[in-house]
Amino acid sequence: MTTPIIEIRRLHKWYAGVHALKDVSLSIEPAQVVGLVGDNGAGKSTLIKILSGVHRPDGGEVLIEGRPVQMRTPKDAMRLGIETIYQSNSMVPTMSIARNLFLGREPLHFGVAGVGILDQTRMRRESVQAIADVDLHLRSPEALVGELSGGQRQGVAIARAMHFKSKVLVLDEPTNHLSVKETNKVIGFIRGLKAQGVTGIFISHNIHHVFQCCSRIVAMARGEIVFDKPVEATHIDEVHDVL
Amino acid sequence: MRNLFRIYLEKPELAGIALLAILIAVFEFRSGGVFLGADNVRGILGLLPEVGLVSIGVTILMICGEFDLSVGSVFALTPMLAAVLMEGDMPFLPAVLIGLALAAFIGFLNGVITLRFGIPSFITTLGMLFMARSLTVVISGGFPPVLPDDLPNWLFTQYIGPGGLIRASFVWFAGIALLASAMLSLTNFGNWLKSTGGFLEAASSMGIPVNRVKIVCFMLSSMLAGFAGLIEVLRLGSPLPSIGDGLELQAVASAVIGGTSLAGGVGTVLGAIVGALLIRVIDNGLVLTQVDANWFKFAVGALTIFAVVANAWLRRTARRIRIETRA
Image (tube, rainbow over all chains, first blue to last red; front, side, top):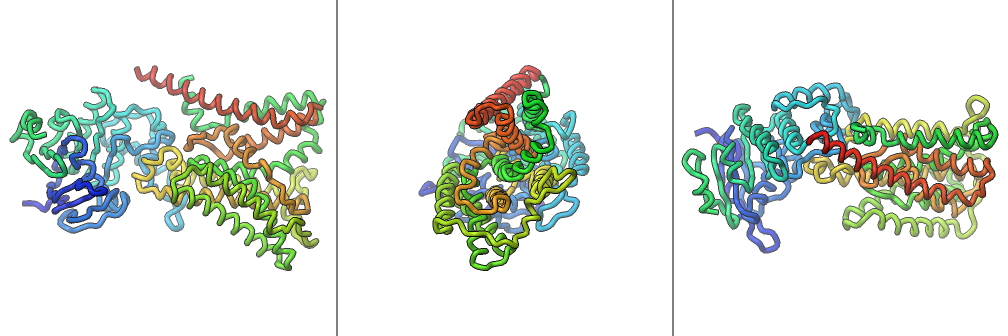
């Protein structure tokens, strides 16, 4: 068996007396796309926030490619190859696609202490490439993100994660507030992950969406994992029953 | 019409520039050619650097999503401290540097208090407005100190250029404006700054140190105000404790007239300058065309409201157009 790309062992998290994660363990193999489902308050978001470096666990450990890691900030998680796309999407509408794509990781001509002059030619060139790589067709990297539709924005977010060679892509309800057509587009992007060797964790309320693009379904309830099966071995009704 | 949104976001100062051109033409015509005469232009450009520098600082801070109402008081406090130190026989350069360090510290406090306690910067800096003004009067002891005679005034106030059209302070102003503009559009820090004001959650989820970015902007705004105050005191020849009173509101007015969004994320240095210049032109033009000068504040107030209403309208219209084209 291959080393899991990401493994969590006996994770605990309390919020002001609420036991949000109770001894949760989960291991995910490379290039697997896992659908994480569950009701509000089931612990999905807590788990994701720990994986993306926003929160720290009160107990247990996270291993990436077999090595235990400490993630204190979202930046730490990104450095380790975990990129998270939130439902509110991590794009600034008043800025261009190219500037959003490289936000926080800008290529510089030269810089002192991390601050310096942007290499805008490279930003433009590489964002055209990154967008084309996820099969997204946009006129120009100079277009403002505020001009894009919700689905296109998620596409750019996924392109960004791909461009920075993320090993694990966490998608936190990326289809919320999207039309059916746009949702299908995003599900298409997620299907494409496996082919590119990227591991995905897709969080959704909508079990149908999860079944359309994941290879494994994990369900959480009351801070515990209550269901974990490959998609071929289960059926939507079975997942519905445990929730 | 379709690209209105883009134009508004990329060139928010365009409307201000158009208005500036119209006003200049009107004043030039009504004053019978005096308005654009060398003497009058010299007067307008001589005063512009002071309010212009404050406006640039306030604009940068507004782009990253915060306000600074304490700039008018820092404008008085910084030169007052420097003057008190010089009266105690400290040389010019260290006295000025200590004054600017105090300005930076006030900006730092504004930022830390705002962010640490999660309160609106509007309130933090309103409190600082009173505190810094009070400090100014306290350290002056009620009597403004007398400035030494051997100050390097030539560095700031001397008339230079063809026909002595500009003061040396204008060169400082232009240099700082260029640097600030380059910082916003050419550096990664400018990217972080705009993202912090444009969509805070997105910026912090991408690992941008949003609090540090904001504190730097608070310090910049405060230091620019202090530096502008120094220039004014050198021009006047005396550190009056009352200078800069109401300047914070003129600076906010300049910023919004120049197209800076109150919500953050949108704005330019050029816009701040256009806004500041518009206010100076109105001030000067009203006098030259023999309108009662007491209408000045009325005009600035009306223009500010008009600018914000126009910007809001532009944004709404642009959004409606986008939805139509998509459907």
